[in-house]
Length: 438
Image (cartoon, rainbow, N blue to C red; front, top):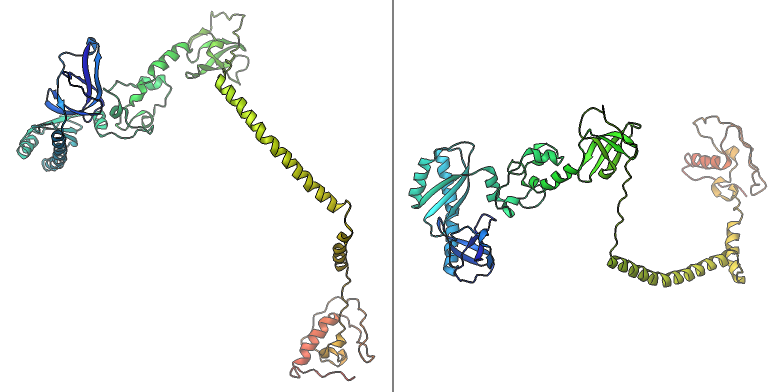
């Protein structure tokens, strides 16, 4: 057994083992460790613990010390130096006209070395750029060309699943991914669907590949000749996740059916001829889904919920019933039951008001402007349009024993004639109609 501590450097999720040399380090603290590039500033993720000797690559690098406040200030100064170096390098790249994209700048802890990471489609001659950077920073300069997957790992981001990139979150190394994995998992071969932000196939295609391969071994291939509980047929589609297959029966080819793998007796796996294949008389049994076992705690919670609902619903129903009965009884008594004697009084009054006869028309003789007989009233100059005759209505006698003249054919009713006559009569006389003599 070997005692170690696990640390992580900036820009990667991979964990490295170091020899603590008897120093107790708690997880989350920053430490200074010795590496092949010199001393580096790192964070401890696993404290002192022992592992098997086979898990450790000897010789182990040693832990120098736990980081102090001076080490923290030095690390902050290095981060500021890296930021300045990034801007200066971009200007130098543009000045030399190089086809390269700068990704990140890293400086070691003592500041003696600066590493520039970049991407490019082809090879780049950056020797002149290295000389300019070395004269600018007075340190050892190193330029490293990386791929698009390393670029995504350094920069980070959010994938189409809504989570951070796997390579930047927990993957130690990149795993090989092929298009065959997408075909095995029945995924769309559209590049936009199975490619990540880096433009390569998504790393998550590898996660479930073993499970799909195991399911494929248990499922029959497409176009296989099988025997089902309903008869023989050919498989048209295979659902690997549900372990089911769609079969087009020989007796009913127009209506394919879905069967579980245990309901299928494979007579020929894959494409081929049926010649020489003997169909067994005994057909497979139908698949019965296992009943879901309900947990005892869930059953107890259901019983308690039912008892509580019964306790809450019972008093509400009794009170509601009494209220509904009282309301219904009140409506019934008001409508057709025994009513108090004074209850009909207001209704009778309202009935009398409703049945009150229409008021008789006020005789036109009572109006001062209409006392003159119609024969003496001047008619309008404008000829009236002829209308169908109307039955004459009896007119009450005028004051003084005189009666109105009978209605002529094609004239308006008496009231409308009186109004028009009154208006026509007022116009020539200035609006002052003479009163009838009493």
